[in-house]
Amino acid sequence: MSILNSITKSRVWRSFFRHGWPDNPLDRSLIMTTNVFFHLHPVKVNLKSIKATYSLGLGILTVASFISLALTGIMLMFYYVPSVERAFPDIVALQNSVPFGQLFRNMHRWGAHLMVLTCVLHMARVFYTGAYKPPREFNWVIGVVLLILTLGASFTGYLLPWDQLAYWAITVGTSIASYEPVMGALIKKILLGGPEVGQASLTRFYGLHIMVIPALLFLLISLHMWRVRKDGGLAANDLDVAPAEDAQK
Ligand code: HEM
Image 1 (cartoon, rainbow, N blue to C red):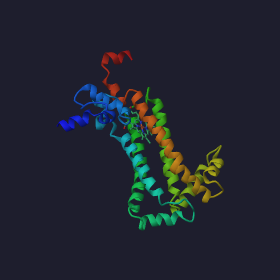
Image 2: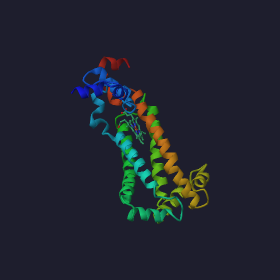
Image 3: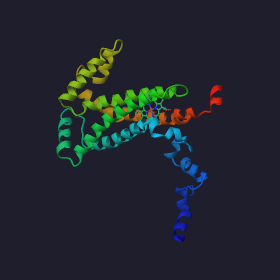
Image 4: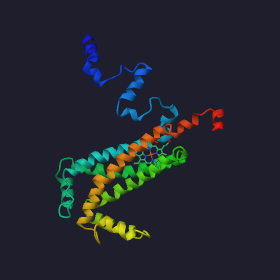
């Protein structure tokens, strides 16, 4: 016991853990405020807002699928080369001869479907509970951008296997984009890097898929979650206002 005591009282230990055992309110709050990951959360939360039946955990599920997609995406990048000669054979090799290649590819694919699904359901939940109303309207707008980015990540990832499905799906998708009234033709050209799907398109889609979109998603998800806190936690907290206080609002 004295060894344990001398470890937990040592300068090295105290430099890592700047709080005591969480059996009192002060140490419990210190845990939340001194940890870079926990400090995103408020020190105290309302029981109503952490009820699973309120948010259904859909926002957190979307974050979890984003993290899993980032990790499995990094694994796939070790093998995949975005060139029209290499892309398809690389995917076949990943499926058939790279250890765990098929597992990571499937986790990445199914994870992408899951992220789109949970993101849309999360949006529906926010709408259903009226959480888009002030003061959360700004966070709703960030959410809309997050949804567009999530769909963008799915769309750009679709071309990368460079199989028939990918080729024709992107041909059709970018042709639809070209019908946008003012900038349609320009959008198609910017996306494809030429008149039709080719090496320039693969390079652009790859850059968007592995760098631009994930970086924007990371930035905006951080902003989105920070705003949840700044707006007073989840909207469920507002339901806690006493009737008299409510009338003054
Ligand atoms: C990448 C996509 C997204 C991620 C990772 C994400 C993440 C989260 C998380 C973790 C929360 C808090 C917990 C929860 O409500 O489950 C939250 C709340 C919120 N989200 Fe999202 N979200 C995303 C997309 C969206 C979309 C598409 C909208 C709406 C257009 C939206 C609007 C909101 C709003 C208004 C809140 C506050 C809800 C409340 O106070 O009850 N989010 N989001």
